[in-house]
Amino acid sequence: MLSQTSEYALRAAVILAGQPDGPLTTQQIAAAGQIPLDYLSKVLQLLNRAGLVTAMRGKGGGFTLTRHPAEMTVLEIVNAVDPLRRIRSCPLKLAEHRHRLCPLHSKLDQALASVERAFASTSLAELVETPATLLAHEVAHA
Image (cartoon, rainbow, N blue to C red; front, side, top):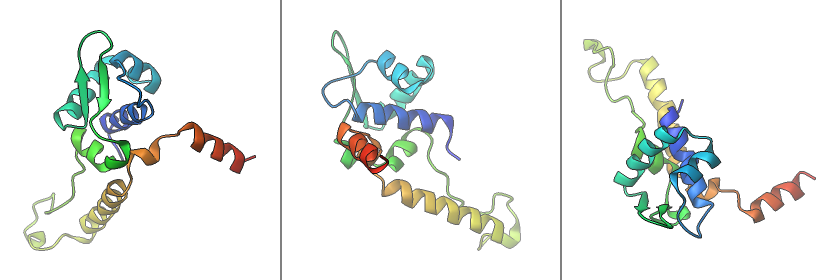
């Protein structure tokens, strides 16, 4: 359902959110997220253009989030690199579907709307496993 680019952007954002103490290099993010370095560079450029990450050059430089993870949604991240495309008109350009989507495309658009709502209501912070959340998870499953 999600493109590879969206998946990599989410991985990179989660890694950055889990490291609030300072910038991470592209190499560090690539290694932690198992993301090809060249592909990650493209993804980080897109996130930078969208204002979600910032790049710091020089020694000690790297990438950081521009906002707290609780203030950033999954939808923002996905839309920055490969926007969700709702179905607004008949993809087949059929005249009889000019004013209303056919049942197939209507159902597909409803599914996309559900995904969009879920992503919009999920903050990046919810996707980050902190030591406290890992401990709570381990206790709950012990």
